[in-house]
Image (cartoon, rainbow, N blue to C red; front, side, top):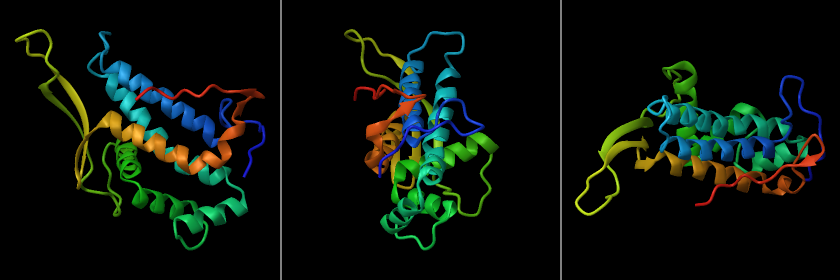
Length: 196
């Protein structure tokens, strides 16, 4: 499938394709990484704001991918995920089952939006955590402590940054057939991937 330069939807500023939203996710991941080292007056909450945005954008990619896909592409996505029918809800459930990081982002996005997640299909094992821990050692004998941002699920604990990067990498794979013509208002957008 090839994308064409499109106008933004009526209720969206400039963004028009899943590639634009994926670039937004990489931008938010870079912001989350920077915020963990921030010395601003909001240094205790700034990473939380970015983590909130990372999870929400990673999960909203399901909407953008599905709504962007034409009928033929939806059939292909349904086949890839082995889902019957071609509904957004079926696609979302399948993606959340297919990828651990996307599932974590779904749970955190819903928790961030609603404060509590009460839907029956919620994964009770997913937890967003900030723990006080010893960080990498500084000078000889110096011990440093700080906040460690992590996500827990039934398979263990991972750094939140790793989860967000894995979600972005997953979406890159899903939409890679569409990525060569990424434009905002007729101009190519730069790939904002952050170094590993």
